[in-house]
Image (cartoon, rainbow, N blue to C red):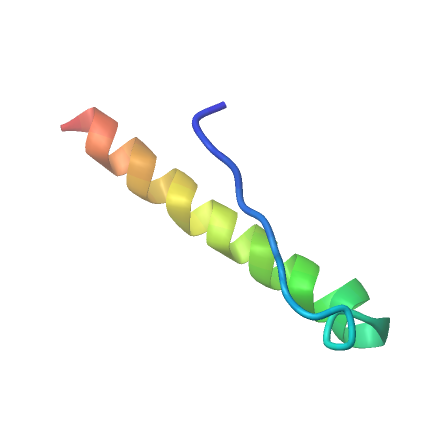
Length: 44
């Protein structure tokens, strides 16, 4: 493992459908972008 991605913010904003569906998708997308960038930089 090279790093991690986390989410922080007010608990009032990290509740319900927003937190359970939208935030995990954004975290996964961000992790995928980071992974691609790491792989592209290590292949050079």
